[in-house]
Amino acid sequence: MLHNYLRGAVSDLQSLIELTSLDIEDIAIASHESIFSRNGKKQELIKTFEAKKNLIDQEMLNLKKQFPDKELSELIDDEASDLLGEMKKNLQELKNLNTSYARIVFAVSEFYTSLIQKIIPHEISDYKGSKTPQSSFLKVQA
Image (tube, rainbow, N blue to C red):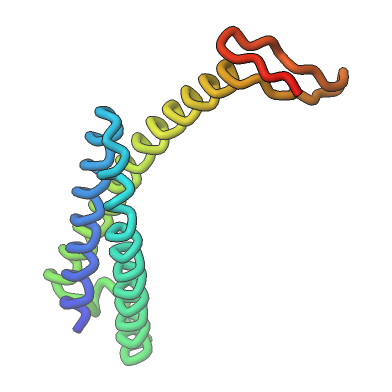
């Protein structure tokens, strides 16, 4: 069973890597609808990965309980060890992709926020009081 859980977890991670790579490509060309349409699939993959990871943890704990005097590395075979290594590699790759994606998303968010602030006057509150900056695009009078 451990091998099945590991294979499934590795597969889920590979799918998440592919989807995140597509998100990075799509945000570069402002294809936001494609990104939003993949969010549900990504959330489902995350849930299934977490469930499989919990099952993997449980299987390893069971092995350790059966053989308390042995190291875990002695209890798992080469295939399981290779799959764990692949899972770790995929997790690191996904982390790196998500870091890159987060930087891009933050930059896009800052761009749109600054654009909105330039177009629509808004009140700024700070320690010196409140003030409304001048907008070069739009004036609002109430």
